[in-house]
Image (cartoon, rainbow, N blue to C red; front, top):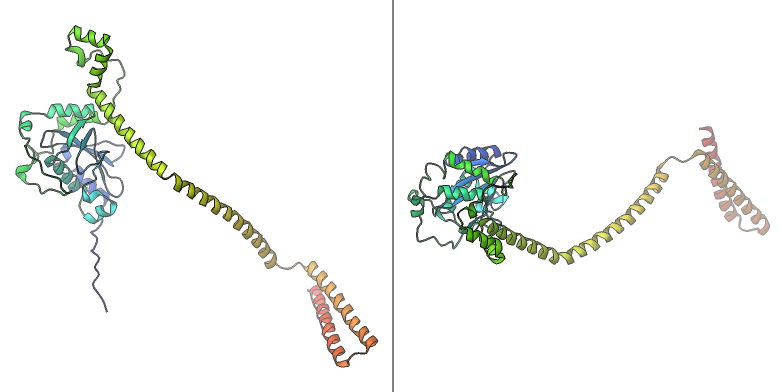
Length: 357
């Protein structure tokens, strides 16, 4: 009797080339998307949120499910973790959910970008000079007036239903920027640029009065206070704090696994010793098996048969001598004598056969 299967049919697997085609040739994403790797697996897409923040979504799609990250910033949002990786979008949380979703990479990137445009991250701090330049270029009164006084409550991670009237300005035409604006995005490809020659001007102090500059040079406290207010120093401090926390957490995790590692190490040593003993025994048994299975040596066999033939002959002669001497029962004497002599003649016959073969 046949029953219906409760398992849901899996959607057909979409080829990687089709995924990339849907992303790189998407009419909305294409103008502000650039390749940033040595192959075709990593791309950056620049976009702008409704509160006028310029953001960059890095999409890495090598094998199974894509990995998406916000680069050049630190921020907080229900969809991102401490490393700015997109973890709240269900479709890309694992290889299984990605294959089960049946959507293309272009649709997935569109969904993530629209979500961040309508529900921007909070506490956005730009850590990349190139992205800072894009932010300054794209800030405009129109975009600033678009900020709204209310934001949706992220009680649960959901993909919002996008209404055309809710979209940021010009979203329907291009994702955010024109081709000229995206040129500034090339500066983001190298996260920290070290100049090859000393700078000839310093914009931070060009507009300062001479007294202010002298105060910075002579007053160490003023210099340090001013230095710690510089965007680069703040960015480095934020990165340093993040790396310190990551290192601390990794060290803590390693220490928690120390006992387990020691236990596994002891178990492996015991297994190795046991393996060595078993290999030795197996080698000895193999040599014994080889000796038993190989053909018998002709000379050794003849020697053993000759010795055995003589032994049985002497044994039969002793039986006859004892009977003559003691006069025991005739029937018992004949049985014992014939049995021993039969073995003697059999061995003699085998010697003859081997010698003549």
